[in-house]
Image 1 (cartoon, one colour):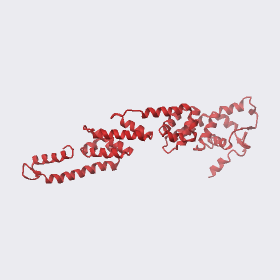
Image 2 (cartoon, helix red, strand yellow; image 1 turned 135 degrees about the vertical axis):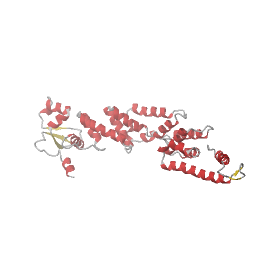
Image 3 (cartoon, one colour; image 1 turned 45 degrees about the horizontal axis):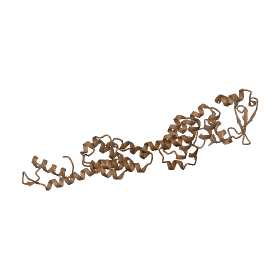
Image 4 (cartoon, one colour; image 1 turned 90 degrees about the horizontal axis):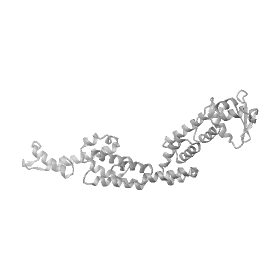
Length: 328
């Protein structure tokens, strides 16, 4: 608390030693050090060392500046305060850091905004403002990071942000082209999983439904998917909450050997609930098979299933498996 109070009053009065210049901003005095400013900023250095009238002046008016923003800029700049950036201060501080060519503070602002791009909880409005900032200062890494995040949000949501119109026309056109390229694709067994991920990223429900339908049709073909393909579809249904696909794939999965399913690396990434559902359904099938086997008359022994008779065991078990479409 004391530190915040000290920072809030840091430039409001002269302390003699470190107050060699006074700025007049919004009819208020802001006391600062020429030495510190000249050390950090080539703009201030030129101002204080060249033939500008500010060289010999004890006070300098800064018309058009915001007192609060300039004080925040100095608090972030001064070595004895090094105030952390916040969502509220980063943009005005960035603007002043750019104007006065304070490279170290510019990099600090860019790093802060890059971290916001990686944060999944960053609001859309903030992401659009970050993209505008990247355009304004020609920051390639920040532009790519923020563009990637914004491009995956539905266009209607993006356009509803008031600041959207401030983006360059080229950037807005790039959003449209990228989306069209991502969504205009012919589905195949080979690309359907990648397309589904893109459709989910772009919140494109029509394409998500197309992908789900494609995989359901694949499940219904005479030639059933291999274990890898089967488990991949189950994983997609699990991850993207595709209920119809999940139901269809489960019906196939429970008819495959459990050790084959569990040997798949993808199977291990399924939610515990889904893995349990597959194995518990298989267990219920085997319970039903056991009851059926016990009632099947052994044709070679002429009595109820005698499991000491290998011919009886194999023939009756295979019959039960075949009736359920499973492999014995």
